[in-house]
Length: 494
Image 1 (cartoon, rainbow, N blue to C red):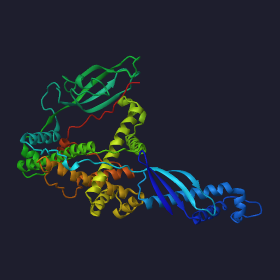
Image 2: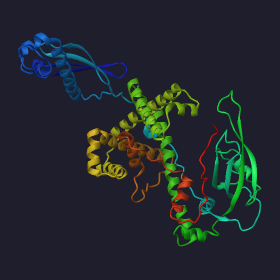
Image 3: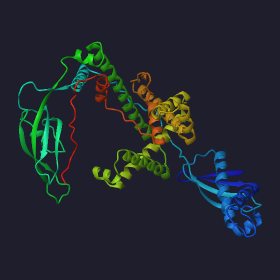
Image 4: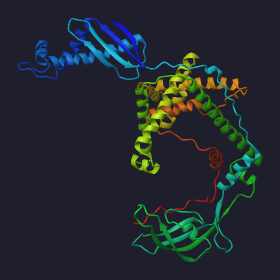
């Protein structure tokens, strides 16, 4: 095989290939064996007709089949020999396919573009170390207290006020507009509800056993329609008020801590851990922005289009999981499909540039990824799918996702290296990264998320800082009657 390459504009490469005549002969032979089993020639059983007759009756099909088989095979050999990295399917031209003569053709294909990094080693971004104050801890303790609140029947008779709760019987007095007669448990006084607008306000000032009529107004769904008003009857059956733990020692005991000091210490540790992660992420994002601004790369449009298509497919999958269609989403967001696609195109361009730049950084810095890190990502995926890690790894390797995981881990390590230098250059070195036991580090977690997206698995979302801290402790409690949401479902008038 003779192969020559020519660089073209726009990250394209032309590959001129010449193969021995034996390639043409073998391709025609394989094509004959395939076609002879598919066609019927008078006087011969299917699959038994000689090649000369097959070529006489089906010569065009025979040559087309041989070319379609030979070109991709020889093209892939040429790609391997030249070492280029195609990013799209090739366009073949100048095909010379004649029996007894060498096979010649030209293939033009988009390839991975060259990247000019700039002086990324000089990037300087200070790392802003986080802190945790006593007030921060007090706020978390207060959140725990609120989560441990219990509803108890009110001991004294007094009018309901905002913050109180009631169990009520509610009945529509205009069934032609809406049929409704239900007991609503734990209705919060003063809260706004959509299923019966104004009910939270209407119950304010009432007492146990009292009956009241009020009017609910449902806004019209169309501009040319009038609002709908419905009269309801409300009877208060039970009244409750919230009771909070008396002191921090009680809170500590409820979450399994020996003392208030231990509780506050654990809260401080968890807050610092999460804020440190956020600080690292924010620092990395700033470093990444400067890294991408310095870099220069002409990205082939096909790479952006392919990535945008992938982003759209993942988005549609998430909508399906949420049982929402695209039309409803666009209406809720007050945006057009063209605007949504433009957003995906913009994100796709940034994603592709990021990968290209970090790949070059990783290559320049000779960044290595330990197979142990890959295995931990696979083990995390296997645990989520409740499958054997070895079987999952084999499946990922067959589907090509395993290489994607390695590439993602390599990019993450490359960015960490640049971020560490940027912090050093600013005189604020990054603190050692500590990974809690039985937890992925940030890079492995990101790679696992990407692998989940590639394999179609649901992606986990991380809880917010405040809720996560309070939730971690509250999950350990065994509360009495927690403050619940109303049990009534949203209802709309006919």
